[in-house]
Image 1 (cartoon, rainbow, N blue to C red):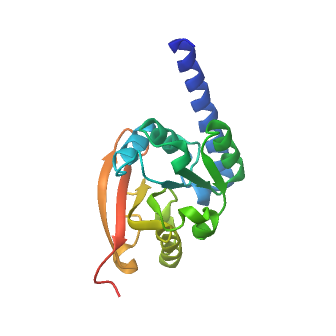
Image 2: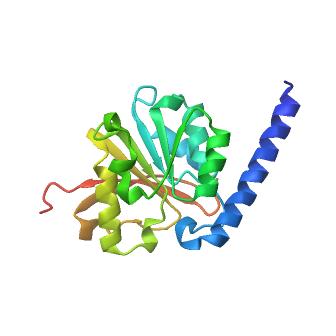
Length: 203
């Protein structure tokens, strides 16, 4: 296949994905929050902050049209070491067509431990969350964060990307320590990547 044909196919796939995301954002604005999908620049930022990418297990929450998924695979993550959770059925079906070797799960991330295979529970190296946490109440943030944290193994990492200028989680109220890992202006709007963990002094 020529490079020109490959680029044409990639452009068509991107246009199709953007239109689908826009339609689903109109249908479910509180689920997707942004009318535009994430950019490849954000995907590369996320991939750079996953330790031991070639051997770890990764769960991506809110797969959308697969921009982050594609960046992870291109960075060296094996398809069988990635599970993508997407609550929107139409987007989940789109992801299955785009990434037939990746396990895509339809469901609510608040029930993440039940959505994962038994061998994955408590052994995930990184959870990547694209849910717009900044629009959720503190109690809902707590419920969701606890569910995602429950999938991680010892030393596992929680990553959250956001379009907010500030921390998307109410970290102090939730007893968390958070820090911004990076920001990309190659995304519209600009996106930041954060990581969080329970504070040692939190009761």
